[in-house]
Length: 155
Image (cartoon, rainbow, N blue to C red; front, side):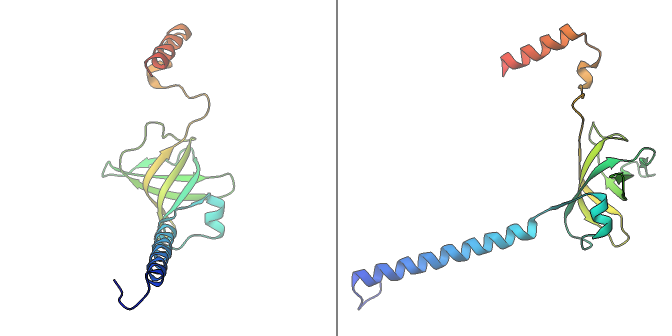
């Protein structure tokens, strides 16, 4: 320990050092979270005040009818997301979610490139309150109720 100081002063110095370390760790964590924050935009906001190219953001809106196209590589998909006032072209390379269709809601996570196209890394498809899984679509109402009841009992 520190020699020549009373134990009371030694404890005070250790408490101050620990306090400084905690404050430093908190500031470092806050800085890291601020850099990783992903802001949410709708097409109108993105058209009015676009984020910096390369900044990680989320884009939410509706997939425009007739805009869904698969490129020649078979993996890359382009489509347009709109909110009724503005639209943003989107490019995504990967497997599309099952619920992803034209006219449905989508949240795309990615970045805006220098050309104004949103390059998505991840797509989250949204559905309305009338959604029914494919497995249940052709069942009768009684069969659906049985499946739901069995699922609740097993949970």
